[in-house]
Length: 506
Image 1: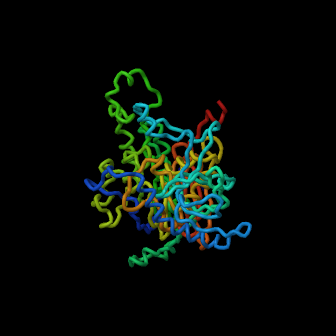
Image 2: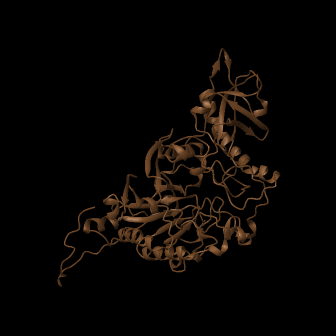
Image 3: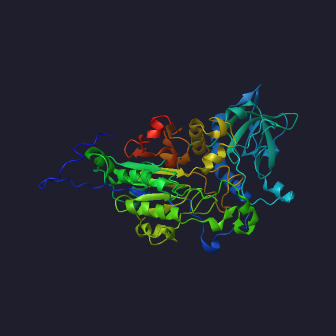
């Protein structure tokens, strides 16, 4: 930031100030993760149908990739044959087959075991990992016919989790296990060109405006305490162009939209379980104490949004800690929770596609849409956090950012935004199609509420380029991420408060 000049000086009566206008926002959201409403939404159907829907959708894609690469694959004069079902694999036959990965992990939660032991759990026991040093992880391939256990060193060379659709080539050994020699996945889908949907819909694009910035933030975690006020005031003043000098105010006016990627409200789960809680189990339901509800954080978030909305449009996603349904895809935070800011939202909550999105657009988690012509896609962190429990990447408890970027890239190459749902990640039991399947490749994929900021660019087989971003928790890091609307380059703005105690090392 440039130094502030002439901050303390008298105002001159004839002095004139240049009027600042914020750039417009090119915004065209998709509604890919909206679920049925009212009586049409129910949970009576089986979750297993999701895996069959996912396999039916991605199997032809994976088969095409595998057939192109393995058409001349042979060992000792034996040519590899395609097998339709996993149960059609024969011992000693060189073949390849497509199916869904299932991983049997030692520490993975099993609801059937809890029921069989007649255990009633009032709260969820959070696991940092499903892996164990004492027991072996079993990797299987399944389809509608059955399961086949996989083995071989190739499994360690590929990032695999439950729910991924793959093609494997190899042969069944004497133990009945399939020795894997190579693995193929779907890879990146087709990527739409910039402004493609806007051109189809006849939307006018303003290409004469200067380069814009899209602001991304996650993990505001407002608690309603006085300690939050200064951090959010700094963030608000920056976005509104009320701070710093003329150059920085000009830069702030180029921010066309703010995207909040979940966890805007601080978690209200008590860390200590006192004797009082044990004496009053009737107040608890699913581990939540209704008597401990605190409306102050939601009111603080409402005031924060209302302060920004007259100047900048906002897209706010639901998160794990926010007042929304727990299962994915999380539906939008209801505007009724924002009595002041909801004046800027669309009037038609039941069917937002019938109207233009309001300046306050409360959206699902995951979410996708077009911002300044680019396809953006993101989630609030649950799919990535759950995948990291299956693998050993990025240090203890999966806190390394390198592992998280690899997971983000793998999700795109698997063409699935939440592969571990519904096995270990709560989700809605879809019956018609798996909404987590990625049909079109985004230009920007972001994930919120991560330990650190990190970014990279990956490339696809047909020239696709995707900017991957891990967004840190603002409450912990004070970092806001800005994406350039022309180059998709990323910069970080950090808000910090001077603490003399930390400076003196006390």
